[in-house]
Figure 1 (cartoon, rainbow, N blue to C red):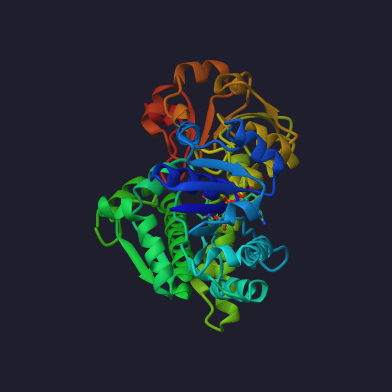
Figure 2: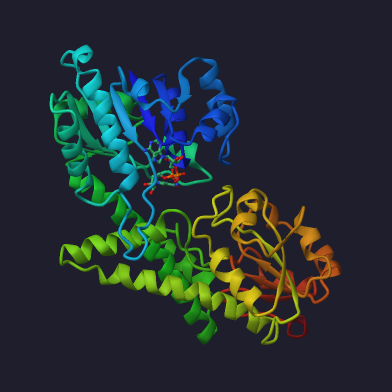
Length: 450
Ligand SMILES: NC(=O)c1ccc[n+]([C@@H]2O[C@H](COP(=O)([O-])OP(=O)(O)OC[C@H]3O[C@@H](n4cnc5c(N)ncnc54)[C@H](O)[C@@H]3O)[C@@H](O)[C@H]2O)c1
C-alpha cells in the first residue's frame, strides 16, 4: 500500500507516522517548506510524546518521506489523505475550508496528470480533516471538475486522536469511522486499517455525510460534558457541595462515565471551540438549530472571563501592582499547542487589571511568547514563584502535581494558590499553610483549617 498525506500538522504527521508503522509506504506533503526541511532532518515541528522516535524509525526504514511536491506524492498512491487545517472562518464561525479545497484542486490536477499511467487504478481521496457535512461531496465535485477522466473514489475518515496521546490514540483507537459509498474506497480503507481490526478495534462504516457528522457530534458532546460539570462546580460553590465527589458519584454510573467530568477553566484547544462553532453554523443553516451546543459555546466563553474575575477576587479584589506566578499555558498538558488555550483569554485580563505575570510551561513557551508577549517567562515552576503574590495553576502538567509545597510557601510573598484544575486537595494545602482557592469545593484558609 502507498499513501500520501497532505498537511503535516498534529493530525497529518501523526497519521503519516502511524500508517508507516503499520508497514505502509507514506509520503507526507506540506506547503510549508521550512516545516518539511525540518522533518527531513528528523526534527519535529510540534511537541507530541513519542513522535520523534516513531518518525525516525520509519524514515530509517525508508517507509516515511517528506516533501513539498504534492504531485509526486499523489502519483501511484492508493489513498491520499487530506489532513490540512480547518480553522474558524473569521466572523461567522463556519469552518474555513479554503485549505481543504485548495488541496483537493491540487490532488485533482495530479490525478489528471497521471491518469494514463494509472490504467483503471482508482485512487481513494480521503478527508481526514474535520469538515462540515457536505464537504466530502464538494471535494468529489472539485476532483471531477479538475480530473474529468475520473479514476478516483472519495471517503471521509475523521480523526479522533488527542494531542498529548496522539500515537496511542491512533494505534489503539476506540473506533475508526469510515464514510464511503464505493466498494473501492471501503476496500482500500479496510486494508489500511487492517492492523487495527487484528486488535479488535471497531471500524464503523457509514455514508460520507454521517461520518462527517459523527466527528462534530462527538466533539460537541464532549464539550457539553465538560461544560456541564463546570456549571455544576459553580453550583457546588454556592451550596457547599464538592464537585470532585459529585463527578465521581455520577461518573461511576456506567451510562454517564467518568471521563470528561474534570472541572476546569473552560475548554480550549484547536478543536472543541472551533468545531462547536462550526456545528452550530451547520445546524442553523439546516434549520435544525442545536440550542444545547449554542449554550455550551456561550457558557464556555463566559467562563474564561469569570476565571480572571475569580483570580482577582482571590487576590483581595485587585491585582494592580501584584506579581502572579502562572504554571501552564498550553490548553492541556503534553502538547505545545496554544490554540484557543484558556490562558489566552484569562491572562490578558489580569495584565489589563495591572498584574505582572511570571509564567512557566514545560513545552508551550516558544509559542506563548508570540501570543502573550507581555509575560515574564521563567525557566521552571519555582523560578516563576519567586516573590509572587500568588500562584495560579492553569494547566495540569504532571510536573505541577507534585510541587514541594513547603518550598512554594517559602518562595511566594503571599501564600495564595488558585488552582483552576483542582490538582491539589484543600487539606494538604492547608497543612502547608497555603491559602487555597479551587473550583467547586469549599476553599480552606489556614486559619480555618485548625
Ligand atoms: N489537532 C488535533 O488534535 C486534531 C484532532 C482531530 C482532528 N483534527 C482536525 O484535523 C485537521 C488538521 O488539524 P491539525 O491540528 O493537524 O492542523 P495544523 O494546523 O497543525 O496542520 C495543518 C497543516 O496543513 C498544511 N497545509 C495547509 N494547506 C495545505 C495544502 N494545500 N497542501 C499541503 N499542506 C497544507 C499547513 O501548512 C499545516 O502544516 C483539522 O481539520 C482539525 O480540526 C485535529
